[in-house]
Image 1 (cartoon, rainbow, N blue to C red):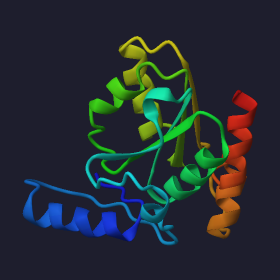
Image 2: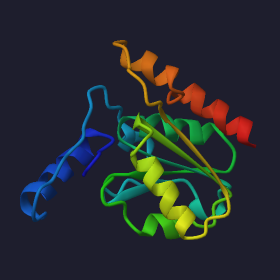
Image 3: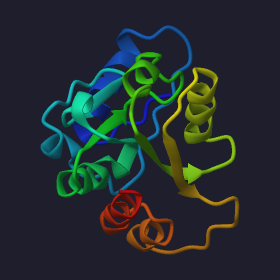
Image 4: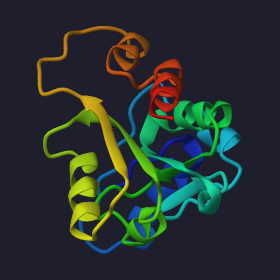
Amino acid sequence: IYSPSNFKELENDLKAAVYTDNGPVVIRYPRGTQKAADIIPDYKSDAYSIYGDINNSRNVILTYGRITASAAVAAQKAESTSVIALNVIKPVCSEIFEITGNAGRILFLEEGIRTGGVGEKVALELLERGYKGEYKLVSVEDEFVAQASVSSQLERYGLDENSIIKILSEEN
């Protein structure tokens, strides 16, 4: 399952789906996606992209899709914070667990339902691998989500830029 954070990733994922991948492929691309490639200079369009100096960051934000741009902007404003943007959310690349295994804090931002989501699966895998740091999952609660604008929903669930900055400052 691909979850591109911008149009360039979408283009590359479509090419991979048609010309490279064998078997079923899903591409999750919601409306209103921001231009994360303009914000994340290390964009690779592989299974993941990294923004920031991951080896010298106390905080690591893991996320995917539309909210990658907000996470990247928040990381720029926070101290010692890097972002890993997952482009493929199923299966999650095993390198992610090696990269984040020594992080002091991991903040997983997910614009989806918490139960059974990618953030829960990553948390379980990290736990099974002996992760000792702090892990916080910010996602949509298991509830009916009423109709509203995208921006108000992101704010409601703590997935907008200002909410991310606030969470990072509370954690430090």
